Image (cartoon, rainbow, N blue to C red; front, side, top):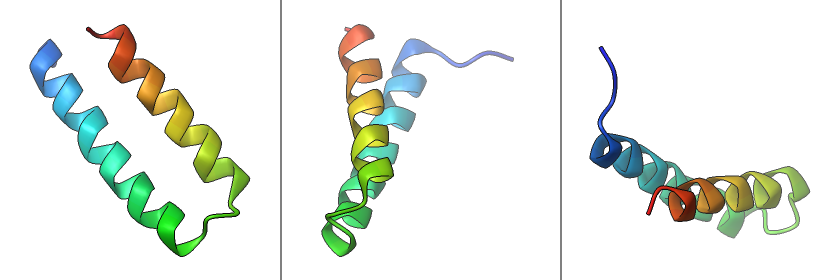
Length: 47
């Protein structure tokens, strides 16, 4: 069973929120920053 666009966007937004929390604890983590950029672009591409 697939995921609807709305469900996918919800998943991406939830993941972005968790990435934000992680970046507050480790603001110098390059991998987290790069992952955040990727997820933000996924959300923007979905609109």
